[in-house]
Image (tube, rainbow, N blue to C red):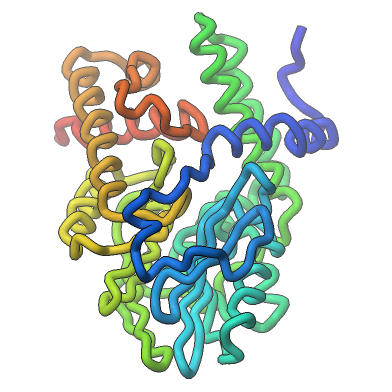
Length: 367
């Protein structure tokens, strides 16, 4: 009989091998750049720096994209990069570990000695913030949405204080009660996703942002000397989403508001707001280059694909709501369309389940 709870030691041991590897490899595929992106004159043919787990290449004048490759390691997990002007630089993302954050500064120093104005987390999620301790230890200010600090404390510091056991139990129960082989596989995937998250959070020295950004005061321009970064906030993936744009070069770091090669993670999303955000992105100039939260550098075609994914999920949720189907059952009934069959997925619950639950709640008639 399988155990309902894991000891912390056995849990971490399992997480460090099968659970994390399975979840990350399944969710974070790194598809090759599309041909039109490879041919874009802004995109360098070879990386500036390649650490295996992530590589950094030039994608504009003073703009560099760091793309994670989970097939070669989990130190970055998310994409990031930096923007460097004559006077200062802005690093983007804390990544999943100090090694991921260190890559950003190392790559910057290959092209410029300018001081770092700050590092910026696009949102609070573990794969974008657990490497913040590197920045803190090197005296680099950390910018983030004003709610990031409270979210990191609420979600991750609480796990380090013993909340990990309850989280594992919550995801272990559906696995025990799975009625079909498909439900069992999906529940196992959800549990592995949680193990992967905890495997990173439990070993991290959580470091909170030191420069909170008031969303009411955004957008904000940062003149780095010859290149201006524009910091904006948009609803969608989390309550804390920030993007960085360089409008003069039609370039944007979108964080996890855009995923390339996988279904988006939606467990704490505002789905209606996210769809409106993607609609706004779709109106940017056609040659806009994007550094998505995960996957290769891309263009607006990936925004359109994500809009199509969400439209399909919303239609399904609406049908289930009208039929009176509870959200958990509704999520199990969702069928991935053929055009999305090759996309990665962190886990069924984190992606399809979250979207279904949120759409059904947002579509429900309000009293």
